[in-house]
Image (tube, rainbow, N blue to C red; front, side, top):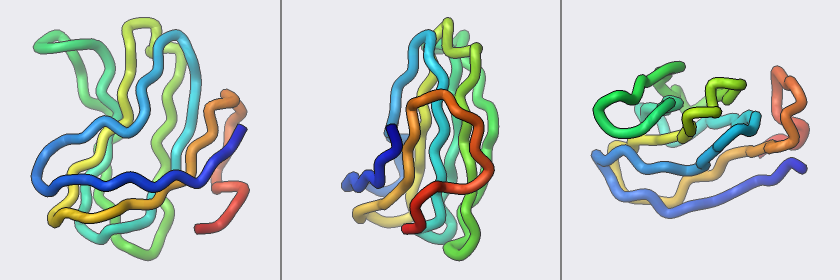
Amino acid sequence: MSLIRQKFIKKNKWTTLEYFFNAKGVAFFKAPKSSAIKVRYGVGWIGKDRQNQKLDGTNYKKLAVSNWSLVGARMQIKVPQDGTITYYYDGSGVAQNFPKTEF
């Protein structure tokens, strides 16, 4: 099932948008400009950051969670200023290169 989601995010803090455990999923982001996105696998100090990307405000950036989510995975964002973000999320586990719905 695919969704367009919106969430209010506070600035300069990594915020979890989606959490996965033994599941696959994909999300696409475009704005706000200069925001950072990543997938964090694991918990605490034994966790690892993957797929670190910066948003440019015009092109879609993709985060995908794979079988590594057996140890838990979180899609996270860090924004330069407080505000509402919009992103596309699909937790069906189907591989995608672009969002099915533009936002």
